[in-house]
Amino acid sequence: MNLKKNDILTADIIDITNLGFGVARHSGEVIFVSDCVTGDRVELKIIKTTSSYAVGKLTKIISASPYRTEGRCSIAQCKSCAYKNVSYEAEAAIKSELVATAFKKCSLSEVKIAPLVSSPKVAEYRNKAQYPIAKTPSGEYAIGFYAPKSHRVTEAAKCPLSPPVFAEILDTLRAFFQKHELSVYDEESGRGLLRHVYLRRGEVSGEILLTLVINGKSIPHSDELIASVTARFPLVVGILLNTNEESTNVILGDKYTTLFGRDYIFDTLAGVKLKITAPAFYQVNHDCAELLYAKARELAELKKCDTLLDLYCGAGSIGLSMADDCHEIVGIEIVDSAVECARFNARENGIENARFYTGDAKNTERLLENAEHKMGQKILPRVIILDPPRAGCDEALIKHICTTLSPEKVVYISCNPQTLARDCAIFKNYGFVCDIVFPFDLFPATGHVESVVCLTRRLDNELPLA
Image (tube, rainbow, N blue to C red; front, side, top):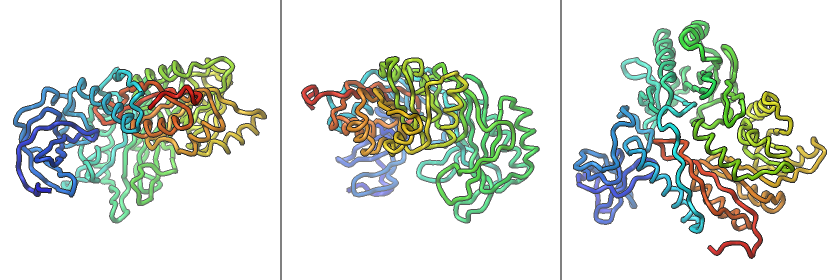
């Protein structure tokens, strides 16, 4: 590489990554530059070089891209959102191309990409946020997000993606921490009490669950904390402590203690009233999730005689939204409290044809055998819903679905286009193909995009040519 650290040069930004780095080329060498937008012409300083690329720091915008905007976020020190400097129209185009590229790279160019369904709200849409806590050199408490590739906390409590009430709650907590000079967790020594603040809110109900993640089992002056929070925020229906005494980057520990009220909130999604605990999965963008679930329901085309198998079911929101369309629902989820919520949600909504079981969806074969034993009947799903984490599905699970369960169709919801495309290629090898991908922007301003596909079992002579 000819570029050297501290080199200053002028370059055109020709692309932007899903992490928000502008891409430039200089004498054929690739440079990644933060805070840049496709179409910018910039002056930059090289701050790092490797054998295959360099990293540059923006020093001056010579001419701004037509896609650049400064109005989406005013918190300059926070770099958490990939597209904070990009107009939403440009962001939507980037995300559509991101999905298309993922499928092309997996030799699935024949799959069509539907127009991106944009979020009804591009700000204040998040119903969940987790904030690390730090102490500044001046002794004040910083509550925000980690700076890129570091554990330095940037003060970003007033994030425009979260509802304003979150920032107001954080202000109250900051004052409480300051008054009692509570210690903050130090990663090197393993000492200190405060680790994270975790907030969750029901979009329809407005109910809020406040969880303090601590390196300990109790918090001093807890009665005063409860009084100060609940007096100002009557919609806070529960205050929890989560104990995490491990030296780990994982935010939440396994143990919760309820200081006040309930350890869950209620919300309504896709017509289903849901009980949601702190560890249970729940889509962070309620309004766009309803559009996504409606598309999944449309693709499932359930019949009244069908059994629906809902894998990675969380609190049951997807399956329960389709309960009226089928004979029975069988849900599997690894988080036990989420399964308890799913069962409660079925009862609360008067849904009698749903059963939920705790276990790792990757072990579906054994789990279904146990479920069949309890139910006294064979589970033969015509339709399977998949909503795995970002890592996607284990290949053994895909093989079991295709060769043993052999449904007519699989409706696959994914928050990661790369693993979705990878898994669709594996499904294709087993005779299950998708014709079209439907992307949904559940995460405006970030580099993430949700998608749903319908994989249909085809005979060998029906498979499309690659």
